Amino acid sequence: MDLSKIITFIYSEQFGWFCLINRMKKATKRVFQLLLLGCFFLATAAITSKEWKINPARVQFEGTAVEGYFEGVMGKLQFNEAQLSASSFDLYLEVASISTGNELKDEHARGSNWFNAKKYPRIRFKSSSFEKVGSSYVVEGKMHIKDVVKTVRIPFSFIQNKDEALLQSSFSLNRKDFNIQGNAIGFLVGDEIRIQLALPLKEL
Image 1 (tube, one colour):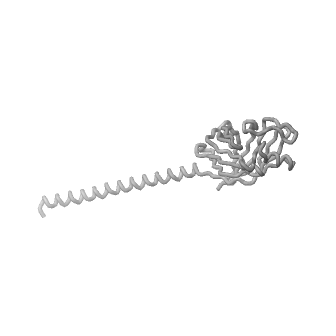
Image 2 (cartoon, rainbow, N blue to C red; image 1 turned 60 degrees about the horizontal axis):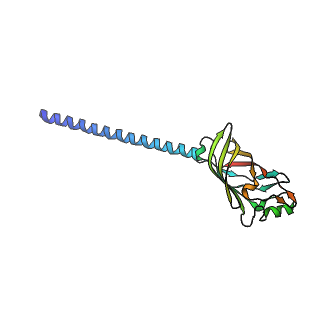
């Protein structure tokens, strides 16, 4: 075998190995990129997808000449303390579930002067933003009562223990803001109504 053929053979072998090594580097880089992308999506899913089941609970209310509760809160609740921008509340309760301990008052509250339960069967709150204030939080959103929609800010605490949590809140609403009259069978109800709730939650 002459020298030129030997050189040609060696060069072709080296070039072949070079091409193989280059392809392996590119494949390894691609696999690494895919692994990073997969880790990113898994981390994102872990951050954003914390949905909670709302266990049965009452919403208490009280004011001058009136007190009682609504039976149960329903809807969709997503909350992650580490990623508030991924959180959302879309909650409602049935107006017909109101109880004041007096059937006449309950019927009056379900009537057209108060909540008008036949026409507006639900009270709804839908969040738009969250912020952390000290060790607690504030959620801002739209409160729907009757045909009125108002922006409200609701403070709340969130205590989590593994896959269970407790959301607690206490805030006030002015009944006049939602066109609720003050006469309750001869009693004049105060303007400010205090709302208290404690929602036991279970992570889904």
